Structure formats: C-alpha cells, structure tokens
Image (cartoon, rainbow, N blue to C red):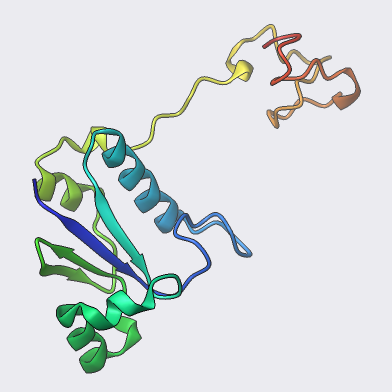
Length: 148
C-alpha cells in the first residue's frame, strides 16, 4: 500500500469547519481521509501549527519550504516523493494513486427524518433545520419522539 503524507499550512484545524466560514476544500479532503481510514488506508496529515518539527526533519519538505516559502503548502508526498504542491489532491488523484474507485472516497449523505413526508408537514417542525416554521411544536428530531 502506498503511503500518503500531507503537510498542511498553519491552520486551527484540518477539518475546515472552524473559523469564520466553512472551507469546502478542507472539508472534502477531511471526508476523503476519513473514508480512507474506514477502509484501513492511513493518510498521514501534518499541520505546520500542530507538528512543526516534522516540517524540519523531513528533508524533502524542508527543502521545498526553504526554496519556495510557505506558499508551497500544502505538500503531498506519496512514498516520500512529492506529487503535488500548493493544492490538495483531487478525489480523482486520490483514486488513481490508491487504485480505489472515486465514489468510495466521497461522503455519503445520511437519510434525514425530513425525508419522511409525515415528519415535516406545513404545520409541524422537527427542529432539525429543514425549514419547518413552527419550532414550538417541535417533536424533536433526535429525542426519539415524533418523527424520529
């Protein structure tokens, strides 16, 4: 199995969900890595703000940083070789490198209680953010009552 190592720029987290707005690219990469992890495929992810010493000890990454500066991040290595800089791998690139179908890398949307037409009619709200208007009559999507 090929070893993928990602060297992220400094950021507060690798998921893309914190900060002033959601970073859809970080969220996509986190989803892909999470799905790979569920298949037993590990992707090493190193953050400049959380694990700075590895940016120094990895000669390839250190040389790139010294030559091109921090704008070269993120850096992706496969078996120690640089395969991409300045951007994360696309799903197609992950797929080709790991020989996995692209659809197995993408997240799956779980069925919501709002998919049940009886749950969220015009007069009720389940409180799950589906757009129902009457929050006072909330039967509670996650409480086990009502539509759930």
